[in-house]
Image (cartoon, rainbow, N blue to C red; front, side, top):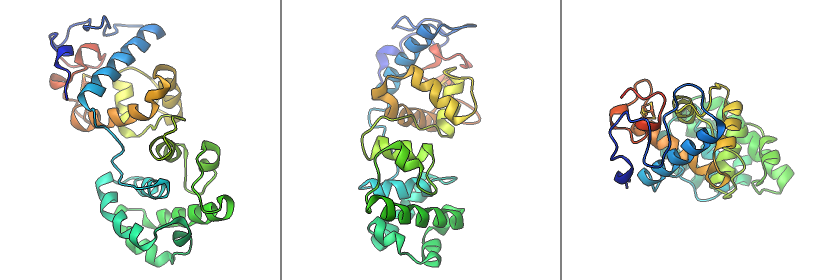
Length: 239
Ligand code: SF4
């Protein structure tokens, strides 16, 4: 539910109820941290149910869904995974899948040949190296075929409840830059900047909050600043 007490100030004001300023020019790190805390507080109030939108029941299912979500909407992935998990209920059965059958099942998510290769490689490696259990450390996850830091962060944060890093996707990149929490374009550098600003207990949630706000309000290419609860503390606000 939206926290209306914090949006009572006229759009375009330079200081929020919490004493946080919209930066004009150079902003100290302390001021940026305070502004980040205010941004998170408002978004938590606005999107109290923000969570991973990839449907999953366990770490195996989330890892598979996240690999499939590359260059694809979560909605499309969620249409494909119920049948996929019915056919391959665990990592061992996925490791033994026929490639042509797997490709046919995931075709609609795009890049299906590469994704099938990643899924088979990942499943085989989990069986061989981890006795069929999805590992719960960053080091082990990023050593699996087809698993990068972003995918590992999704799995660690949402399936294992471990705040090891921050997922940086297209929405997190766009909002972080518009809100001037980073000036970087590279995902790892953006993640490092956010880690400096966001309390560790919010490392998983910040991605969900930015994704929700990015889908609903701070859209690409045109942000809806006129209805944005962050307008008075956002350097990119058009109002
Ligand atoms: S004020 Fe505009 S640019 Fe800033 S976060 Fe809101 S919608 Fe995005």
